[in-house]
Amino acid sequence: MTKKNTALLMSVALMASCSNKQTYSDIIPVNEATKVQINLSDYVSSLEYIPLETTDECLIDRNPSFYVLDDYIIVSTSQQCFLFNRNGKFIREIGRVGRGPDEYRFAGRGEVIDEQNKTVLMQGWDKWLEYSFNGMVIRTYPIVPQTTSTTYVSDGVLVQGVYNFSGNAVNQLVFTNQEGIFDSIPNHQFFTPFDLSAFGGMGVEFNFYRYRDGLYYKNLYNDTIFQIKDRQLHSTRIFDMGRYHLPRAVMANMNTFRQETMKYNMTQNILEADPFLLFSIFSERGDSAYIFDKHKNQVFVMQKEQGLKGFFNDIDGGMPFWPAHINRKQELVSFLYPFEMIEMLTREYFDRKNIRDEAANLRLKELIRRLNEEDNPVVVIGRLK
Image 1 (cartoon, rainbow, N blue to C red):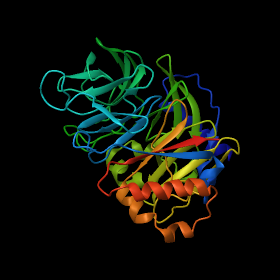
Image 2: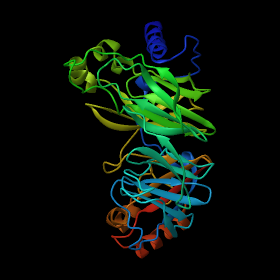
Image 3: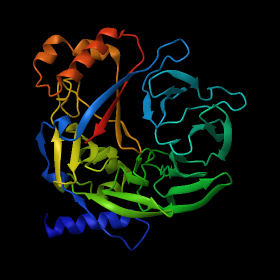
Image 4: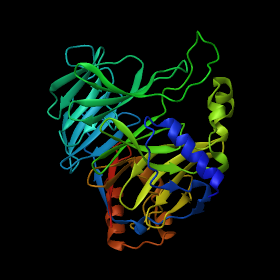
């Protein structure tokens, strides 16, 4: 990396942070990434498939998110939150959408699940509702205007991203408890809007994820991953995008920003485990899956298989594997729709694969024979070596 690029990256990260004292522990050289086939067996020892029970009580809607905990599986859509055991047996619905007492407007998504305390956060009509896994509301929080992308910091404490519609938002993140906002992190991404009387700026750029006991945050429009610790941002890694780095000058004016943003690389869906950091980059050049191997200190772009991104499944010969969630035990969690498995995983497909675990392949084939196209999705858990 040139001295010029390093200085630029550190400058961008400094402007995005809330502290003048930053330590840059690692740079992710995205600009040096090579496209290769990444075998699942390089990192994963085994896969477990868990078909979720399918009944009229628990038919899973579109665009679900899946979270595997120590003893449970939670499935969340915009209007549902279902609790299953680790064998896929349906237990109960958590809460219910509606306007009645203790009913929610939108179900919790992803990071709004507290694995340790076994609670789920959902947005009500005038407050946040915190449910225990038995379906009871145990706590409420005020809804802060102009905020989005909520997650837990700790028991009873939330952090939320602040919409920057007009380009002059004071804060980028706020910390709230049952009484309301009690702390914040200032915003450093200002811009000139199209029209001072109109909205149309930033609001969906907040990416939170957990790794081990830490909570991490990256804004879509900067290059730095921060750990949120003691209600402050501590930089941990920087993405070196090279010539596809989003210049601050482009962000200074919303007209320029909307016209030119897609020329540059923007990261999303960041997940981290001991051996790697996974992320996607989207731009006008497409949407690609990346892996940063921590031990090799190298970045690779994953070759797609039949248009699907992810690890090449050489363990049991199944579909490409790309986790949507990594839990606190560092289990890699994904899911598959039965109709896609039945359609893709044919004899001809398996015959073309170099399969390392024949017994696992036989178990997968037996599962496919038992599936119906209309069944609920199958949760897939990858266990790291």
